[in-house]
Length: 222
Image 1 (cartoon, rainbow, N blue to C red):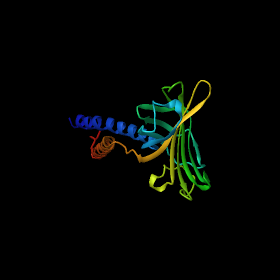
Image 2 (cartoon, rainbow, N blue to C red):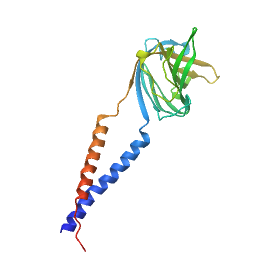
Image 3 (cartoon, rainbow, N blue to C red):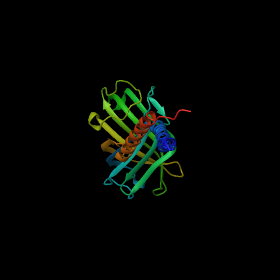
Image 4 (cartoon, helix red, strand yellow):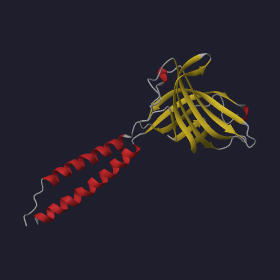
């Protein structure tokens, strides 16, 4: 009878331990993915994109990238997701060329030097008057010095910047390019959902209790 009870306890907790280990290993594999949401407006666009998008179109979206520690300044292939809403028009991430680039003491234009955080990715979406989106980029600039180095790092806060810009570029069948661009009014890290945090904490607690119970088991002598 005692042996059956002990086996029952093991049968309850060992699957939980295995499940928690699997989840933790999965989380570790994706722990470096960070997501940011943004809002902004349109400041410039080319005529062929009217009236689908216009200067009054509100802008919002999200982007995701892998911020695993790295050095070098140019981090190709780290962007994993993008959604851009311009009024009622939506463009999204397209697998292909993408990168985060961190630059120090470069020419920012208009005679100013400074630092820049830049994200570029291929994009897709419905055509507008024969023009299809193919590239999205954003730049976050600070005249003077902003970064200590060009190691991989998260985008700086808007309050620390002297300039910001997002841009969506379109191309038609003839290879002609048009664009819509603007500035950011907010840029915020998206936290991990609370339900996920609580679920993970609950599993870890369960495994801790299970491990303690298993250590206290007394097996019959044979």
